[in-house]
Image 1 (cartoon, rainbow, N blue to C red):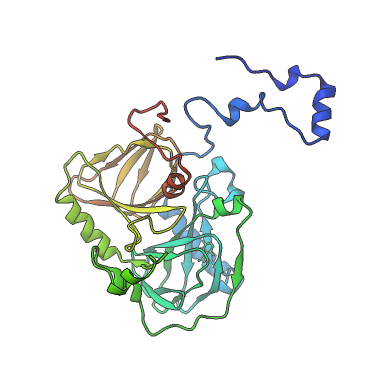
Image 2 (cartoon, rainbow, N blue to C red):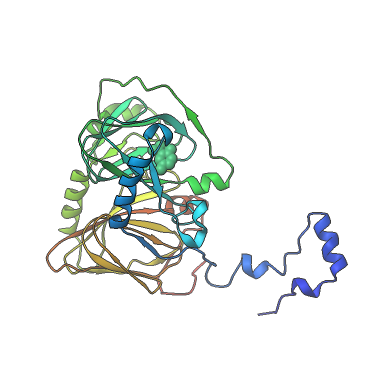
Length: 355
Ligand code: GTQ
């Protein structure tokens, strides 16, 4: 491999002339932009513990009324990427949102897409495009790009959910913005998308006579996901990962364009070693206790903790319990990478496999 020329080898007059004309020589920076074998990564393998987050969220609930927050959220920021940039991974924004009884988080819509994954509490709801969606623990709720959404809480005690947004991608494209709206007129069809689409392989007949809908199903109840995971485990070999993707039931494709969502079940005592891949990811622990080794960093996890996995990382995840099943909710940027043509999984544990 040839040694590339350094910046300080160039005459200062030449460099200053380039700078004055907003020109930059590539070769001193080429290897940084295109490193051999593996990307340069600032993202750190991380765990955020719910035991740390929860009291801080409740404190925020006392310090900041919802009117002063619009959304009362603590953002899980990866220190390797700079806390102020609010990135769990380069593409994934993760926040923990608190809503207290009878509060409302006002109606708005924005260019980034979001999902909610319910962490704790009962009585929360989100209204998406006029449809009121109940929020039970473990449910996944979609608020896709451009759709009106507002949140409320009709129950008792705190409700907390995890927000996952493709905000870092949309923001870096200078395309992130938001519109305010009046409260939505709620159609008298609560949770209708769920009712129409919940059964895989069966669609409302009228769907066949029109183009496929972008976001036909907006709520994926945990009850269904958990049952489907157990059914799948019954036909999955011990050395295979029990994992289900959340998809658009009309197209079979990922349910949002940039970020992908899946649920993983770890059988008692199971260790999984998913292939190293080009996507970054976040794992949220729905239930269970274990350890993850991410690029060699050993991170313990338990109920409601959240982990960050850099691109190209080697990953091993252990369910420490010999008797209890563990469940993980995964967010990744594989849908975007697939669309852009550079998604890869590596059979080996190091070198790239670009065709
Ligand atoms: O609930 O609409 O964590 O707009 C960040 C931006 C949540 C939301 C976030 C948002 C929301």
